[in-house]
Image (cartoon, rainbow, N blue to C red; front, side):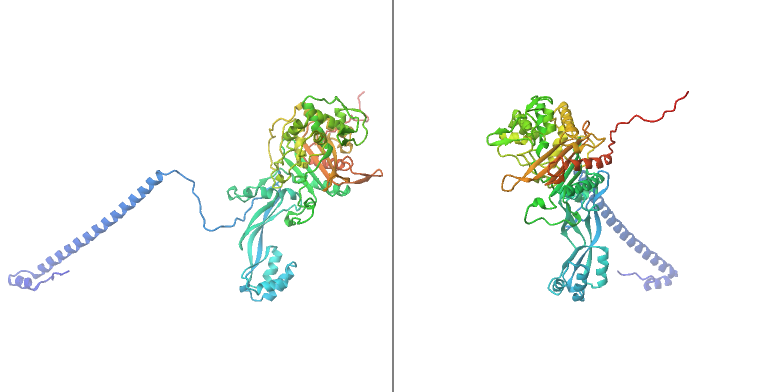
Length: 593
């Protein structure tokens, strides 16, 4: 840019010659220069404003277009995406029906080593073996000095062990935070809870997964973050479970039994209030599965659900109830009980001679095999099978456990007439104690089907009708008579009107036939019998007790006393008030003159 001089010489000289003031020329030139500068500044400002206006216009158009696109799309819930495959460590608690903890999580630490970072591997190996006796110092040293760059030492350690390892002071020994599954009640309800273990593991967390029981059945629910840690409420009552286990454990030892199981179930809701299988285990230290021998001898085996047995005479009430429902008999109908009852090469006998005739009620009270078999002949195989199917005896129970589908009833390959006769008194068909509990509940609650559940329910089940209310009431009366005057006299509990039926079945040999000195003793009971609330099944495996100079193996001497003591203990815990007659006061009465 060429700048014009403020005092051009030619004009200055000319102005002096003409007598003008030269300063006016300088002032004029200065004014013109300022005007030019102002014009240029105004042009730059106008250009900048134009560019800024253009940018605002583009931004407005972009935002408006985006808003138009969003307005025209279907609304969706926002989703979060994360790279990688994170390990979910949180697992929801499991509670009993009253909110008491059955399973929860405990914050702990894992211990691992990075050998390249270790300063003194030999010292570390020696001191770790002293802290953890199950570790071998030589094997640790071999791992520490080898080519391994990472080594798990312990998946879980206590705070005391963590401090001891920290005192070693080796930078190659590192800790990782994690959660472990804790069962604060130990072995109590072990078979129901099952247990948990670790799935995917990392140095900073581990995935806790269920391996058995309800832990595995509800694994997805317990680990689902969408549930926000909401606990799982079971139908169990922890106090009743503890009292039942104490009684059953003592009864099993007193009766010299190999194993035992019990099921306490609400007859209206199907809720399992207590379920036991002995021997049991501690889910905090779950034992390994047997690799040889009979799996039924393993403490992991759930006798109440997985164990299917011929349960004996407890089935007789089903036969009589069906016959009454079909109108074939009534409680007073006389049945021919002369014996033995012969069918081909088979002979059916009673435990003792009951005479040639018994009423239907007496067949149940005295537990006559012959009388029950004759009633079953009038029912027929097809109708018997259909009735037992309605009660749930032909398929696994729907209980919320991964073991439930394995408790498959063993049915006769050919449901012939002789099968009908033997099944009527509990032989030839094997089922679990949980099957039996559901069957008794369905029959005695008024006659409607209930299915066992391990989840808490607030209302009765509304299953299909199995028998009429009249037949259900008649069956309850017969079972009450079994306790008051029949084979279960040791089962009477003052104030609770217990009804029930005994069952003693010989154990089958693996090679065929039956043992003569090994039995399964069962007592299926209901209380109170006049207005049932609960069904209790107690089963003892190979019980025997010396009484009155003889070895007793029948349920009346073994399972019945155990069940009676269990009812005596748990009924008050279930808020059941005993029905005791009030005596008239006796003494001196003050009267006025």
